[in-house]
Length: 490
Image 1 (tube, helix red, strand yellow):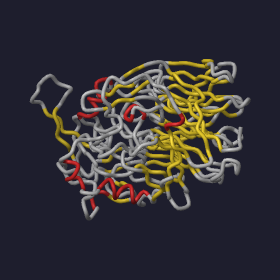
Image 2: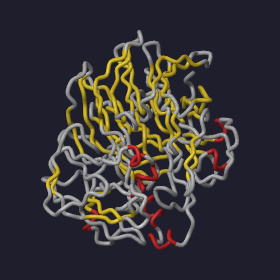
Image 3: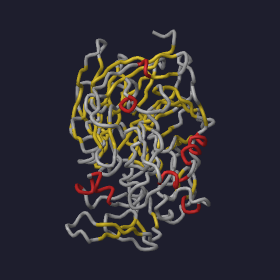
């Protein structure tokens, strides 16, 4: 299988710089021709690590987003109930029976449902809550539902994510930011949420002092086509900032990893300064890791060419959003590497924090959308202590142009070195989804989890999602649950 440090991926992507991208059309994996053919998953269309085989466990799922296992070792899949493009369905917790049939254990409307973990007889479920706000919910075997945390700031671009249940009695979860890079803009109107929540904005976890940077755009909230809005960071749309203005921090907040007791209670801050902390998992050594999606080239403050990240979460640390990328302060990058071809130079939104962010544990390809992760812990599977990460795939052209599809695969990462290796990727000359190469392989991997014995790796494949300049459209009943099994394991 191919392997490389992400520096190689970033160099390949940036070859020719932003100027090269400006003269070619985007070639993202979601930019497929319509209509999309019905999905027929076929393991033979996927290249996996030698010594392993790929199997189909279940299909015809609608926007599956997570997986866990009950006390009998049965797979329980979460269906999100929502796709970008404003397709609202029903969130469902579905057990996959031995004969392939599906048993619905719970369902609800506060979508998207983004993650689930079973522990001690209960399911800990995250409701992303794009309409009603994020929630952390405990569901017992008897179906009893207990809300552990609610009113989480999940109305924007990114939602409440996770969970990871710790041995300390807490449920850890991520909360994504409302915006791409700190400023509410016209892109948020196009996403749909600014229409529903015109006063919503990013919330810092601790006090921040603004630099006074403001951004002028058209104002879609009024009928006057000539009306303009001036907007500052951490403020509602059309609210300008001033230099030295202090925005008070609060919890819960945006762009953070937080926790709540398994019995409920106040939400506590763990770390902040993330953009979209999606997949959370404790490694065998007890350390907490999180995947984080980098900035897009869109909105009032577009950022060009930064990676996605894997972080080791350290309590109390700030991880750099909205002014750092890849461990670098964007406004002082000597080569202006983060400035779009036709955009303004990136300037900081807040004054310098007490301590700079740490370096990422690993970098993923630009726009690859690193999502769910798990760690190998059994010698029968191999690669003990290494992280396995689902790469959902690019959302070009909405996030910026790409020269080729990016992601749509499962990779493994050595957290000691940051080196990334392909583990499961569609066959062909490009890493593109099945809907693009007209095959039966992976579409959009969104979560990976080992079974309770740690011998088999399950892949949650969200299904077909088409993205271009005019339409974002999800296809229901195209989700698949796959399984990777080492040779010699039944």
